[in-house]
Image (cartoon, rainbow, N blue to C red; front, side, top):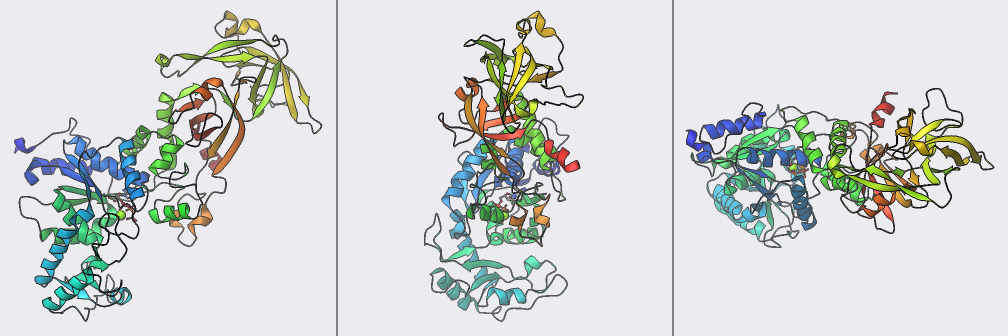
Length: 567
Ligand code: ATP
Ligand code: MG
């Protein structure tokens, strides 16, 4: 048997339950020792973080055991599907770090084979055309505890069924007038076996096959067979498909022999707090303009997360952390954010920016003079070196880093108090200037030239260290600060309420007049990850231009939200 094992993973302990099944199948030499998975998105929306979990499983398990993973677009419903979605799905999978090589397939590629199978099943008396409406069919379905009722069309002759089905596909009948059903068992304890619908009539053109077809297969009549036609060995999906599995096997039985058959394995979905995963709801948010598009940085989509500044590694690490089980759970978005911070902390370039600036004049600093101070680009990785940052007589600090009447243990700037300006000097506050309403307009300080960073005098102990930028060289920027899209933990569970009522009205705050140091402005190109010191992680938005810098706040440095929630 051993020769059938294509690749045993290095640590065979620590396999998740799906990997264990795969390992056992390979060991047993099933399917000639082949491993082939697939990721089967329906191109009816953009991918979200839940899909990322499926992608990591489908591509991950193939990678781990030396198999292959197909990308199969499950394009069986032309009404909802679009090439825009196909393109975005490809881009997102690549961005996550996976590749399907030349194995890009479409369920629509199999329409001819599926149609042939349907004809065969009709000929064998295993399928029939039903003329009833979907309401009538549903009413006859029964309940899990009471059997269903046979359709009056169930015993049509093979000839009549063949004639009707061919004419359905020729476009002779309106939508909803006929369906093709499998003749199985209206009393089955599995509701999916109660003569499931195989084909329905749709007259909408298909994005790949145009107007060639007027009947389209249902998911249950397409998925298992597509797996089979493609040579898929392990068809990994989410738990809601458990009750479909017998039907999956039923149709696969019509095709497979003992040398090869695909098998379905189910794991738990990813559900995230403070958001929704339903593509239907996400589409509604987009269509109604409640967000700025599928890639709005508040969306749980891969493209939204990319735009917001999340990294593929942070998403993959998060998915590793939550793991794969056989029971549904709600995952805390705080765990995802933790993974994002962990990764950005390692890679983000440090710079200084002041979100809510107030001017500080250093009165004993020579007028008109500027000097450069050195700043570390990333203390987590000294190899990234330093950059220089201008210092001068006028600088900006955060408005809330100063208090006129501070409480005890306030270690930031206050009258007569000393603070360190990170990377520069120790300064002492000597006074303030206020406007007519008592708002602080300017803060006055003196600096101690002996405390320049690097000089022995800089060793002097002061409790507070502030970030700052030099006033005359600072560049103005707009910052988009994002918060949770919904203000309830699990919107999907609130079935009584319209999910749109639960949107967080403060999920986007636009901050104008943010002051960034010139180094940040120079390097603000798409994809750059910054840490604005003491504030958080930021990335230039797609809308950013050198003339008008726009940053997305990817995430705050610390999880302030959790604290607020606990109050
Ligand atoms: P719908 O069927 O309503 O259009 P879907 O989210 O199931 O939505 P698909 O395109 O069918 O969308 O999903 C492709 C694959 O991704 C499927 O195998 C599905 O099981 C998986 N998937 C979808 N949502 C999640 C999720 N939240 N967690 C894990 N896997 C998911
Ligand atoms: Mg689906």
